[in-house]
Image 1: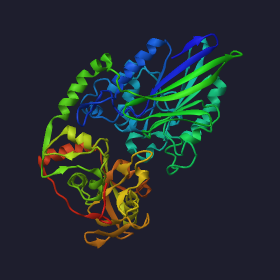
Image 2 (image 1 turned 60 degrees about the horizontal axis):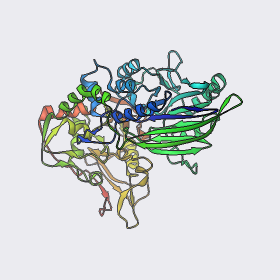
Image 3 (image 1 turned 135 degrees about the vertical axis):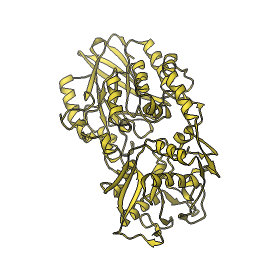
Image 4 (image 1 turned 90 degrees about the vertical axis):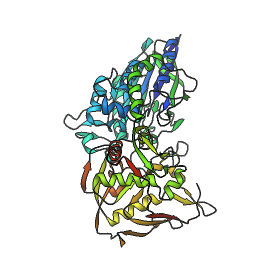
Length: 532
């Protein structure tokens, strides 16, 4: 908000990032109430605006994908307004930024969302190949407040998207380097607009430690936030993508990241002073505000009533049954020992693709597997991403490299017990980047150095040959090299199955109705003594 007294002013910026379809204050997997969602955030925005007529409200991307609500909308209700856009229009945000998950449902859903928006979508580095201009909206926008206080807001997006997304979803689009794009636009904006404040909204995160500047991840270009703070002319860098909660400063650039799923939001307070007809920043602070003890906004809840009711009915439909035990009590054990739920996903992928080698992962530590009766709620709570399937032609050398990459997930602790490598838990949980394979046999020997851990690799009782080629089914994220599985990048595509995994699993239950829980011990992790 903006308040004026003599030659001083205070500006407050509110922003969300990585909302991932969370409007309603519930966890869809359990249907329990939760302190999250845009319905609560809307109350915060309204309360803030009551204190002032001037508010900047922004969203930093990954808005329209991530909950069963959005999956159900895309499958059955696209004749209606996108619920995430309707909500942001009601909140009346000033601008949004394109996130990588905005592309997950395809170009038509994204185009409809942007056309329905009453606010501009900013992404200076996502370029239409035909026109050479930003694809989805202006690269930046300017807000001018009372007494001529001027704020420029530029949006950029991680350019790593082609490494994850289906090619048909990003056809005709060029993703320019986000850091270099900022280097080009910031001086231009400063010269042309002469803003008092310049905000960079980046759907990306930090590649280096904020305090030391030491790299915290492979410098692939996925996250470039630290280096962006070296660009002269940026006052505030709003970030996201990594689902972290961060406030800090780098080279006097105030940086923020508010987590994910609208469980919290970022708030920036800026104090200004007018000196010689120019507004100067005297102080700037950033906060992460949780949405605990915030009431739900009645207008948002009313707007969502029909779609939410329809979603709940869809989620509670029994679609199949399990004979045996396919529940997951401890996710670590489901990764270190073969689990019937993992084998089930592998069988689904193999039947849908025709390949007899399959790759999958346990996507997060909240997955509980399937009980005796399976509903759509069970499926979407265990498989929350709209992945499609791809069959790649891989050499034995590729398979070995991928297995070695997965084997990095484990380390031995001081007692020689197998446990999770901390880099898969901090700064961002990445348990989904540990893959398990079906159709081959192998051993992960954690006592060996990284890169030398795979032993006894066979296919149909024969050693996997480096130069021999094998068809392998995996999800499109991994097939494009996602998770730094570079050995899969640009490999020949044998087949693409253009249905998302939830739909494929549902169809599997329609065919078989009752599925037996089975477990083939085709891999092991040693030393055998282990704990979570």
